[in-house]
Image 1 (cartoon, one colour):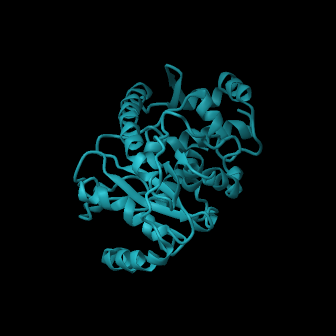
Image 2 (cartoon, rainbow, N blue to C red):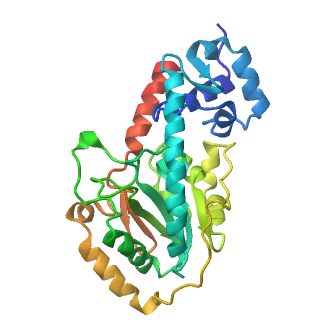
Image 3 (tube, rainbow, N blue to C red):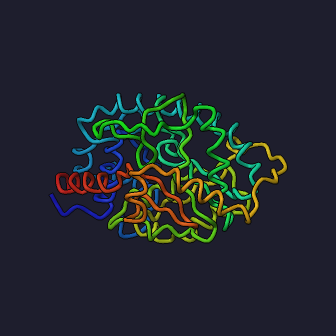
Length: 321
């Protein structure tokens, strides 16, 4: 067998990455999320390599237009993906109703769905993970007013933590769920801190996928578009992955903003929330990029699994490439 081409290896890298999440891919998705190719290949080139590469044909199996590693049970993976898609569709309907309230807060500029919801790959137990962009000087008050009603309604992940073996939602909140579809407000940044590269780990594949997979719910001033422009580093790993754009099915009804956010009150909201941070979050805050607590970034991913996914992925690469 001759040397494997860059495109063959890139296709395999992409399949291996998504195999960690039991997520089979269509050819279009394989092309869109092509991981670390030497150049941006065309969709027709990906179709062609799948047809003519005996090495890929030995490594992969297909079912109803989806591909996964041979021996992974691609038929069952497709069924599982379809079931998770239906749950995610339901969660997006819940999110769209909640987003009417989000849009009432003048300090909240943009909201996007992330993690498993952004991939339409949730279960009944999954959180609704959100990334929120705020106006500078309004990050603490925005978080306070976003979290408060969901806390009072029991729609937040519980602060009670499960054993490590139970894990949690990928890269987001963790805890015993106290109600159906809990809302996880675990990642905020202001419009002054939209370049997220400084939060990346070495070889942070997950963050690259996370940035490009964000699903806009509403984008009041184009902040999510700016975020994609600011994070040009993503294209080094994912040259074909274009940012997702807003869809009318996800946008909430727009109502006048509530006059409940004033810059002079921001120190009060900061003090309240800093004092209520759980001890384990205070201990690791700003030590690394798992938990970041500043006036421009609030990131509460104490169960950050990016390093685990990176190491698992590189182990798969060593085994298959």
